[in-house]
Length: 290
Image (cartoon, rainbow, N blue to C red; front, side):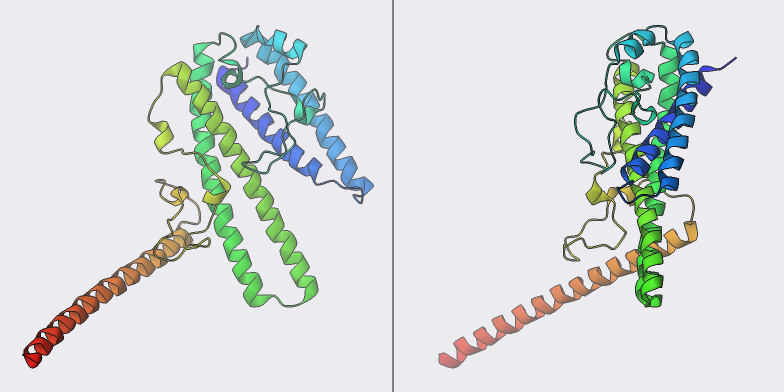
C-alpha cells in the first residue's frame, strides 16, 4: 500500500528528475556523440516507466486526474527558457517523459477539488523542499566562489584551465537546478497557502531572482556603502553544511563592515573638527578686520 506521503514525495522526485533531464537534453548539440545521446535516451525511457507506474497509483487517490491526463492539459507557460532561473521549460503538447505534466495537488487545486490530506502532505514536503533548495543554492554559490579564487591563484596552464572551467560550469548548472527547484517549490506553496490559509511563510521564503544569487561581499557594481547583502544569507539555518567556512565568511564580512563603520565615524569627527577650525578662523578674521 502506497501512503499519501510516499505518493507526493515520489512525485516531487520525478519532478526533479524531469528538470535535470531537460537541462541535460538542452546541452546536447549537433556535435554531441552517440554515447551522449544514448544516455539521454536511456534516462528518458526509464523516467517514462517510472511516471507511468506513478500515475497508476495517483489515479487511486485523485480520480479526477484522469481527465487532465487524457485531455493533455498543459500547466506550463509558452517559451523554452525560464527567464527567472534560466532552466529549460517543459514543451507544450510534448509526449516526452521530460515534458509530461505530473498534476500534483498544488498545480490543480485551483481547477478542481483535491483531498485536504494530500494538500497538507504536499505543503509539508514543499516547505522542506524550498528550504533544502535554498540551502543548496548557498552551498553552490560558496563553492563557485572558492573555485574561481582557486583557479585565479593556482592554475595557469591551458589544459588545467579547461578542466577547471568544466568543473565551474558543472557547479553553475547545479545552481540553476537548485534555483529552479526553489522557484517551483515556492510557486506550489503559493497555491497551497490559498487553499490551506497558511500565512507568514512568504517572509522567510521570498522570491528568488538571479541578482540574489551572489556571494557575501560581492559588490555587484555597487559601492561598499550602498551594497546590500542578499537576503538568502539572512535566512536562519542556511546553510547547515560547510558551517565552518560560512562562519569564517560571516566573520570576515562583519569585520569589513565594522571597519567601514569606524572609518566613517572617524571621517565625521574629522569633518566636525574642520568645521570648528573654519568657524574659529572666520571669527578671528572678523576681529582682525575690526
